[in-house]
Length: 294
Ligand SMILES: C[S@@+](CC[C@H](N)C(=O)[O-])C[C@H]1O[C@@H](n2cnc3c(N)ncnc32)[C@H](O)[C@@H]1O
Image (cartoon, rainbow, N blue to C red; front, side, top):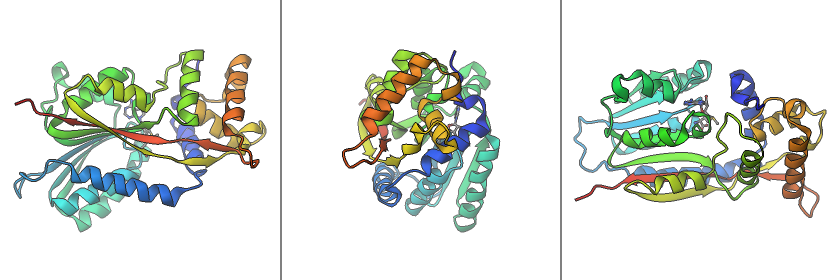
């Protein structure tokens, strides 16, 4: 039986923060992220937007909104009026985004936020007949590493895409299939089905090719220094291992054969010739621009 890490939200964020803190090249990656998102925001269909009209953005699983705040600031350089619908089930974490939003609205009075503290599936189900009335109205819909946690991911992608307006964009940030994390996800999902979707950029881009959209992928190669995951007495090591496997207390609850498979794979993939022990966790934005049929 799988014990999903997300069942204890506080523990989940503790392990997520342990993971993020181990990146060895954060500045380089931030620069590349800035470059990618400046280009993506530049592709939004804003040229025909009237002065009083808003750029509409919907972010799903925004967490503490670190990246979303940067995207909102980038959009507001191009157009003064922005409407941001922010959806996040973990209320305490979303509060951190609200604080950032207060700063944004002080300096950019044309920006407004609309908060939804719920899961994406509950949000969609709550609307009568599953229709929100906002389908086809967003310039930008973002799912930032949230798709793994949504019950029916393919159906969620359909719904996210429905929210995008013609020429608008769906951007799904997700683990890339080529790195340690992506390969581990593929091994793990073959070994044991669980509640989480061990999804990679390959799954998302092949699903989105069924849409009438132009698909592109933007990838950043993060590397994590994480030798302590092989030390079963290390608290940080166990937090990291739980985040990699998306399972709470992997060492205490996973069947022994699964532990051997995962740890053997990680050893082979992480150990480098110079003696270092590095975990590659590349992330990709799979971007679908909704094409308009003439
Ligand atoms: C890895 S974090 C990413 C946070 C942020 N988007 C970022 O990129 O830094 C995943 C986020 O998905 C949220 N999440 C989990 N289940 C969800 C669901 N069913 N619907 C929407 N978001 C969900 C989590 O609470 C968490 O904030």
